[in-house]
Image 1: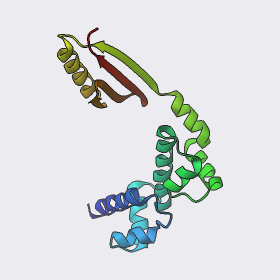
Image 2: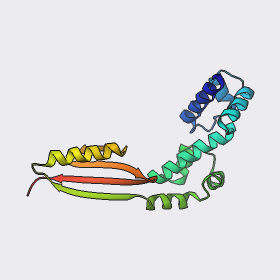
Image 3: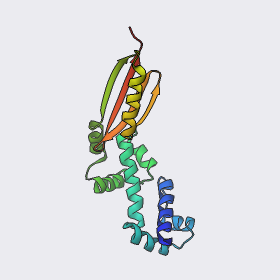
Image 4: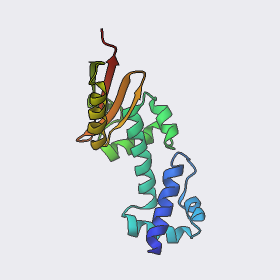
Length: 171
């Protein structure tokens, strides 16, 4: 429907510009070629979120991702996510996750596992590589092979696993 397309368009604008602190209902409505009152009404009817709630959700979700996957400081994350200051960030973050940013980061870091395997290259190496490729492909993993090292990340029950396989020459 027309309303659905409008909301999807607005969400796309928000997702692309969440780091801009000056992102407003009016600026998104202007980009979507509708009035702000129309966008506000349709957005909440279709998405179930008010415009402000959705922007806050996108920003906090991005902050969660950065806390889990980077070593950026809280101040850098606040800037990256278009949030205003530390005190409001802590308040919004806690309301969204039930945790402080530091507690969230520590819990996420403790969920990560690194698995390392070492294989000696032999006549069956191609079969091993084919098996590894097929296994991780079926688990929707992201992986690459570089300098005789296979790097992979995949999730089980939303917990990331990192796999490093080292292929060395036969001794």
